[in-house]
Length: 377
Image (cartoon, rainbow, N blue to C red):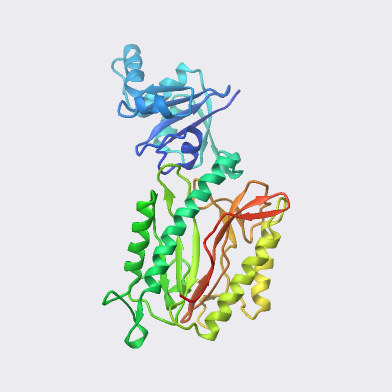
């Protein structure tokens, strides 16, 4: 029996749905691809004209029209979205569908009760999403250039601060905080057409936790991690960039840590190419920092120290997608777009992380990130 493909979600949050349709909508709608390849959307009356104008599918249905046909046949029966979906599939003579692993349970139960066989896909629903074409690479580069505008705004705010009592950073007569820098970054991103989410501005000891967003006053002579990952409103593609800076004179330990992370990133750049092992790259990055005296493990209190996350991840319509460069081995292929983000983290000291985005090519990689790396501001 031939297998169709079915997604029911909103394309703001489902990268698979947006990839298939190139149609943004905030409310759930139905995508159905017949075994022949012919594709369908079912949307509300609010979206039908826009969908027929812009969605990259063969046929767009409006739920009200489907409901009329269903009620003409079964006037007393339920007209829920689940029932109408089953009816549409019966009209198209589809009895077996592949769904994403996060397909809605209620919809799945109703379809199975109507006789449709559902097969959840445990892996990538569209494996081809991992290989980016030239247009997608251009979208990601645009997102990175916009990310750079946010990074420049945040760093400039830190640069323009003065060093006050107890090394507190002062900007325009007020303490400079993570929240203020984050607001400046977000303002720049929104003006450039991007949607910022959970931007990290993490100073001093807070930076020992890689996903700590940062809060409160910032201080001189300490590391400040800025990790910015906005999504472009029009294309839907993400940028991702991290820099670690210091206002004032960096202590010797901070300077050595920053240089070790920079050197490890260069090791990764030199190894990334078509058919390269992600696990081998990750191990080489870890070893590079270990040779410089920056070991990974736990401290006396059982806290993680050193480099304890992956070297990188795929970037595209999702902020984290296939492939990964880490302990679980995945083979890199030409057209993969991945982050390269080694870091070192120590409680009480903080952290250092540097992150660029590269595209994998047959004999190496090409850095899509154009923002410079420096420690002192």
